[in-house]
Image 1 (cartoon, each protein chain N blue to C red):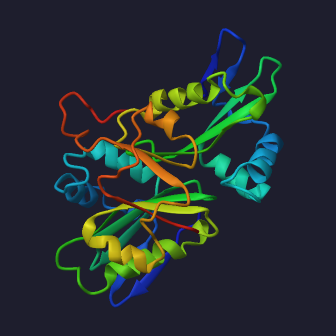
Image 2 (tube, each protein chain N blue to C red):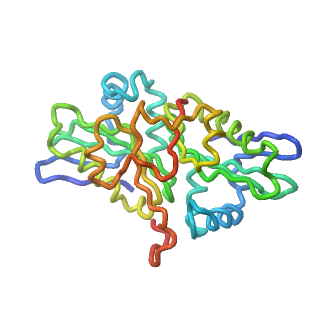
Image 3 (spheres, chains in turn yellow, blue):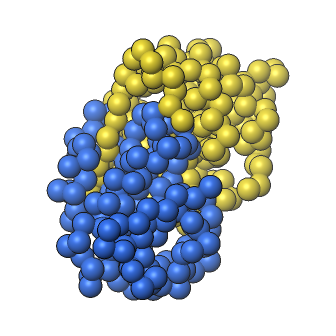
Length: 155
Length: 142
């Protein structure tokens, strides 16, 4: 897989795995509604097995997105966020643009994501639809998985 | 490290990538499936390299089914390209494969399993899959 980078207005987006700040990702996700309590070792494992996009400025990572993919037919976009102080200036839109433009993720059969209510219009602008008619989507989701005692993060 | 299971009737399920009959898989997906018509062989090879693959083999060794899991081995897994050829449908081979996927030791403690299907909702519902997302599922063609 090839690394890619984009620059704009003092910000940089990079897919270089070694630059991804695991602590920033873990702190943000663990405090949020999607993956409450997610432990560091789970974040480390998914970073190792995803195409990661870090948003950097002033030497710090201030935003993130990742793609779980087979590099051929399918990509799942998840854990998209910008830290406070970096929102409202189009960085989220730029981040999604960069994700969709990644050279290793072209010609796929399906992109997929689970959107919160506030982001639906953003993703619609990029051609995502929540009309599931063409291929019926099913899922099995365990929202509290990291909060239950004895879970240990799984394998 | 691959996993191989053998049923009493001689059918075999294996995650050994080297055992896959890629021309047979390609023929099925590109010509017979409704979801991957025309998929080229190079793209299939790339998909196989980046997936956890399952092959189903008849007692005579021929490949009769396939499926793969796209995963980060941490939080999410997407099941795709799952099929059993018509001649051996009704023997529970598809159910066996999905069971094995969900039970894979490297895929325990995931937060979300996903798939797309047009005609096999009953099968997946048995394994706890629902088609009513709590967050909005959105899809986009490549």
